Length: 100
Image 1 (tube, helix red, strand yellow):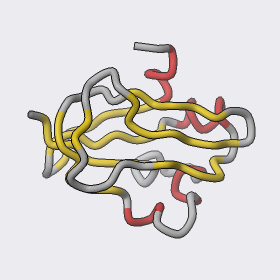
Image 2 (cartoon, rainbow, N blue to C red):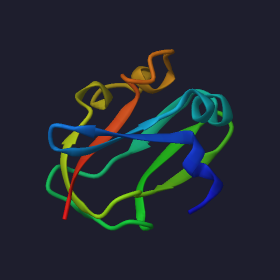
Image 3 (cartoon, rainbow, N blue to C red):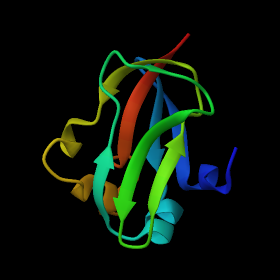
Image 4 (cartoon, helix red, strand yellow):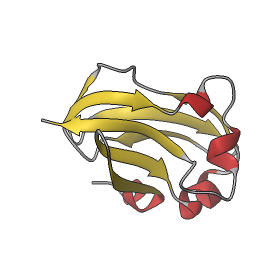
């Protein structure tokens, strides 16, 4: 795994594993302006590209920490990405993945 791992958190969710952005990740990337997220039902593989974020300081591809099926995408990210730029890291989640 790359050094980017420290910028993302995982937590157990109802549907498996929730993947989000840490405050360190927010600091390192700067204000996130866009995120290309997978869709519900997409298959993801540990170590493969899960999503991409475009921010003030960098464009980063994020590797999936788990293998499985995307069961949820943060609805707060539909219209804007403010949830990824706030101080509430629990709100700064990308997707839930049900592990295979």
